[in-house]
Image 1: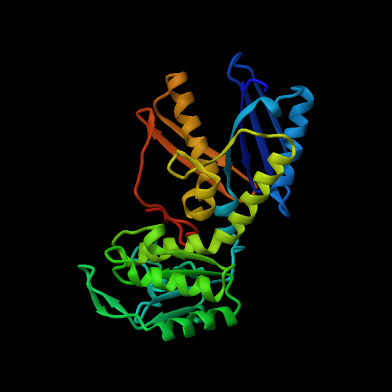
Image 2: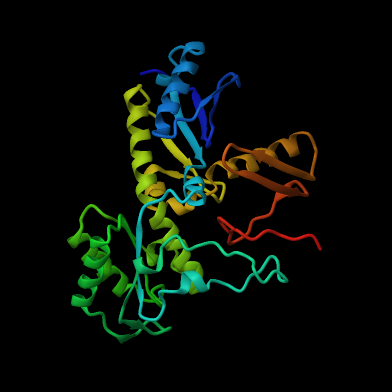
Length: 323
C-alpha cells in the first residue's frame, strides 16, 4: 500500500476551481486552476486533479486527505437557487421570517429594502401547539392536523421542509413528532428541525437558520455525494473533509446534514491563510479582500487575529451609508 504523503486543498468558486497540493515530506507545493463546471462542480474537481496528476504522477494514490472549501452554499442563497422549501411552525409565528429584527443600515431611508424570505408566505404553514418556556406542554400536538399541513406542503411541491416550533429548544417532542410524520408521508424529502440545527433561544435567528439549512440541504447533499463518488472513482482512498464557517473542518456526512454550517466555507479558509501569512511576515494589521466571480469577501485582521462573532448575515439588501 503506497505511503500517504500528500494533502490537497480544493476550493470551488463561482468561476474557478483552485487546487493546492502539499507534499508533507518535502514541503513541495503545486497549484492548479480550472474553470468551475456549474452543472456539476465535481467535474471540475476531477479535471483539476487529473491535470495535477500529469505533473505529479501517482499522487492520488498517495493522497491522505482532501480539504474542500466551497462557495456553493452561499452562492445558491444569494442567487436564490435552493430547493422549494416549506415551513411548519407554531400557530401565530408564520411571519417571523418577515418581521425579523429592527436593524436598519440606512436609518433615514424610509424606502430601504429588506431581503425577501427564502420561503414565500403560502409555503409557511402553522400547527396549533404550544410548549411553555420551561419546556412543559401547554397544548398538545394534533397528529391529524400535522398530517394535513404536511400533505398540503407536499401537494404544493415542497422539496424540503423546515420545522421550527416555539420553545422547542427546551422540549423537542413536537418537532420530533412532526419529523416522523414527514418521513412517513414522504420518505425521500429533506427535513430540517430547529432542535437539530440551532437549539437556542431567539425565534428569528433559530427560524431563519433552520430555513436556510432546509433551503440548501438537497443541493448540498446531492453535490457532496457526487463529489465523494468522483474522488473514489479516480482512486482516492483517503479522507474528505469540508471547511466550516467557523474555520474548522467536518465530515461529508455532517456537512450534508447541516449545510448552513458551511455557508462561508471557502472564504473562511482565506481568513486563516491571511492570519498565517500576517504572522509569517510580521504584519499584524491587515485588510484581506477576495473578488470572486459571484461574490466579493473581505476580512479585517487586527493584532494578528481575525475577530470571532457568534452570528452573521447572509444576503443583505440594504447597504451602509456614508455618515
